[in-house]
Length: 395
Image (cartoon, rainbow, N blue to C red):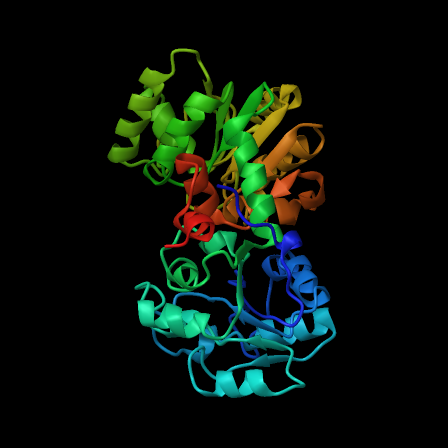
């Protein structure tokens, strides 16, 4: 069963309740301002389409941070409401709570067009998929739209349970559709050669993704702290690099499964005597005992770039090193530039790698930059997510 496309929805005069992912980073100092607006910007086309199709009211739902079911002003959506109002050129009213009686009153005011409900995770029932909360939210609208791919792997009330009250009246937003189409291309019909670049901190965090990639891809380029357990599993010295026994054990299993030699590992490194300390070139595969690897070196950049040049499909998840520190960012930035220069169908997914692509200035040169960190990986592992299934079939 296909998702119902928002383009086909009849919205004239209807109240539309829509779930978005406005979980944006905020500055740590007051007044709290949004430091990266990408997630809101990518939702704007769906919001504009709903308004242009003549919806009488648009009620927006989102979470921000992890307030654990309690009201916490630190996680208020007020900065999001202000940004949306400026971007849309219309008033955006922020409700005091997602479920107080004032919401119904707001929706009865003729001049109120767009209402943003205060952080849905201020309510404990959201993460518990509470049916009463789902029903309360559903009572605000005639039509439900889910454009929050980044939250679609959660069985939460505003993503999952709410669908039970909108049988035949639930639609995927434009961003949700683009996310699914792009990730499905990786799973269903990737053009070959297919190269995956996987980095980040721990093998155990991405073991299912790595196993899936071993089946799908022609070449698997491993970088970041993810690489050190693989190197150690092969008997190579990794010094003080991040490397747990559990990860070495998992890496050994994956190397044993790799009959076709798909896994490629760093040939050299940029190291340091301490985390974030002065950079030291490490021209060989072995890392001295008093040093830790914090980036891939020039030989590895060249070798990985050569693999990327041949690719027709590329998936990237996880940085190649401590890219937040300029001394250890060259590997990650070089990979971003190498992928951007190809004509391959390229997808980047996962919070850190998306941040790295934004930092590199190459985001517009990727086929798709996923807004869903955990959601994009889970979709690749399973080919489905609870929030998407619920949107298709109800609950």
